[in-house]
Image (cartoon, rainbow, N blue to C red; front, side, top):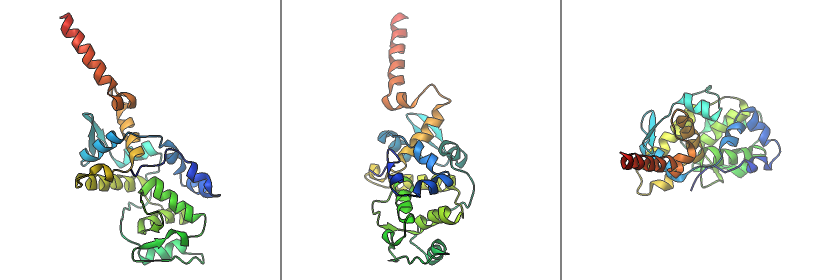
Length: 226
């Protein structure tokens, strides 16, 4: 399962990494990612259409504005989402002003060829935002997000996350084993919890079905007392 970490311990392992993510206001988002439910994430992914998903019969709206609110990430910067292999302009932009030499080929860049703290920064991006299983390879979108942090050429993160959710949903719908394609578990929890604020449901009652069971008992009592 490719879900976000349940805590931010990994971010603190190298000096300077926390400061980099804090300046970009990403650290606050990472700290909000506290747990998830696999069945909710799967239902969200399989029902996601343009503008909304449905979980337990509840409509869950999803827009860049909502993502900005639930994540705390600024809805500013370039509306960018690209899942291609590395290309020269991004490599050149990432190392601009340094003497770094990135080692790689058309399959990707070796994460180990990045100097610290950027080697670990890229790893955190993979763990919290892009969910690769092969952590030693970096692709163009890893470099673009790293450029956001290193050179302040900002990506609109709400736009990026929305399109990442859509891509994940598309892959899940087209798979015979959709559960293996689910990512953004913690982000989905934040989105669903936000939608529940205007209902009688809470995250706990949604996951456990407590409210549904209570309503069934209440309805049975009304029928018996009629």
